[in-house]
Amino acid sequence: MMNRDVSHAPAVCFLLGLPRSGTTLLAHLLQRHPDILAPPEPWLMLALEAFGKVDHRHPAGASLVQSATSQFLGRIDRMIVTRAFSDAAYCQYLAAAGKRTLIDKTPRYWTVLDFLDSLYPEAPRLVLMRNPYAIAASLKTTWGVPLLAASSPPAIASCLADIALGQPTPAIASSLADLVLGLPALAAYRSRPQTQVVHYETLVAHPDDEIRRVLAGLGYTPTETGSARGGQTDYLRSSTFGDRKILERKAVDDRSVEAWQTDLSIEEMQVVTDLVGAKLLTELGYERDFQYAKQAGVVDRGPEATQGYRHLFRTCWDFLDGKTGGSFELPAELNNSGGQAEEHAAVAFAASVFQQAQRLAATKKEENLRVANSIAAQLNEELTAVVSSEVRRQLAPAGRR
Image 1 (cartoon, rainbow, N blue to C red):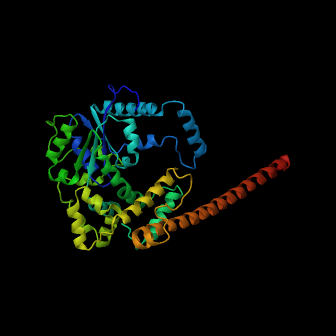
Image 2: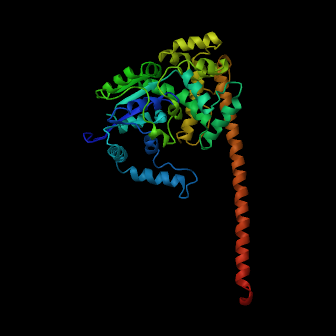
Image 3: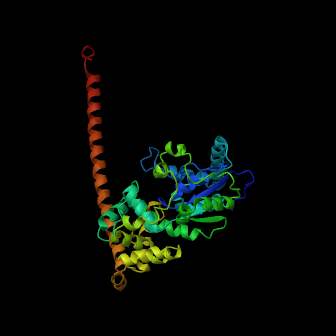
């Protein structure tokens, strides 16, 4: 715990939830209170947590930048410096808007929960939960994210290979990781002190009542919140972040709650069930939805299937974050060469996908190297031509220059 005076710190609340879970809607409804500001997805904590990590193409050298900043900040309390920066940013943002509390709503903060706890231990949290089947359906219908099943492992392997190479994370891989890794992380976070849990289904069914409850938890008297209908959306129109669908809404309704039942095929429901797991679905209160999926033809493949995916994605994420020492190896839990892999087909599938990703990563690395060598050769040829031309010009008689 840092030794800091928080009496003059900005009032900030972190709204946590997966992409496509309704975080933009909740932030928008809270912002109707005259003292609350909810800008679209600052992503500030993600940037600060990754301070010093730069793209591998940085002209100063990515490893040098990270090493130098780590050594410099290692001599001081890095968290105090980081907190001072974020406090200043939040304070200026609030002052410019004339508001008292800022809602920092950035869905992928699930990747930096420990960092949040260290930096802002006193700040309240809102954790928004939504039916995982509905989140997956929204990923499919809004972003066009295909819910890849066991019948298409090459596509998953290609995404993981790109992660291993440090290339921009494909939307498919990051969206699947939200369900595989992000959902259980947020589920475990619900019991944290100063944390309110909001369920999307309750929010859209009874928006006014739910917003009053949340505001009361934040210490506000919900007397000037207005109705959950209409509302100013100019701040969203001027931003590239946040759910654009809210711009089309005239009022909050619950039609989206069960839309997943027609938006998802049985195979896609199976994928979601494998990724999330029956245990977590039940723990989060979505057992009725899980039963609907089973009646439609979905099979509960047991916790091994979900664990296989979690090990798979955690290893890839750790590799991307530099936590594996540069080794993109098959997780020990999946590296079975006998009975267990044969007994649990889902674990064997996860191991197979990982092995395909390893092969693809090696292939793509060789392709990248060939492209780099080709570019280098072309540049060398052009440079040689320029130098030769300049030499000829210098050697030419003065009258012929």
